[in-house]
Image (cartoon, rainbow, N blue to C red):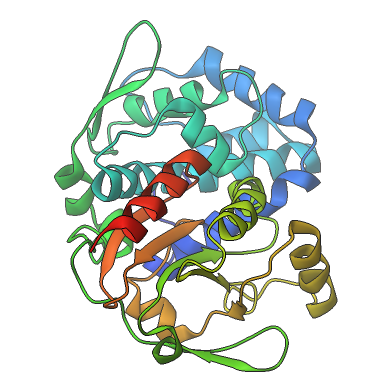
Length: 309
């Protein structure tokens, strides 16, 4: 078993999505000091042009259960970084920073992102999809086509690469957490932001209170937010009571719904959380965001949309 090698199953969009959730939610169960030991080892032993063999690390280096759990978490993240970087660049025309990547995957060990990117660059089986600044380690260029051509990643991003701005937002009917339902037809004539998230998602938890503040800021101005929770779709163990408590804690006054399989498919097969779509009064997508967004960016885009005629 090698880093970035497929195991026994093809890496479909759903599998990448499930791996992403596992990585984001498992960190609380992985000791930070243990993950640092793994990262320190990788930092010292990554050799350009030579793939790391996970089975060797399991058998000869990291034999304790908590070490293997940390190794599993990092192994899963390797698959997702190219997808996230390509999707982020395609959707925003901005290359994600090291901090963006750390926030998305809850990487809290100092220098951890740079180590993972170095492993990606060093493994000869990974497409050369990025260029980095030798001094800062920041990504300076992204080859989206290189990611799209690799079968391990293409299925997860092929529908998002076409871009959403200017396209009609797919219609939806969703079950709300309070037991009622919400249809996109009821939002006709209103600007709205569709917010895809799941419980335990670190960047979602960072963004959620900002969204509550934005909704309050533009209250009564033909704008709302529709928070689409993916817990049930992803088969997470979060209970209805826990979701309700989270919604109350975050101060959500806007609708919160369960994501359906159809909505997941209609919106391009969401594989990075959070993902957001800003829709105008005509039901047309004006902005598509992947990953955490600065609240001032979202507030500015909403303000500009409300001011447009």
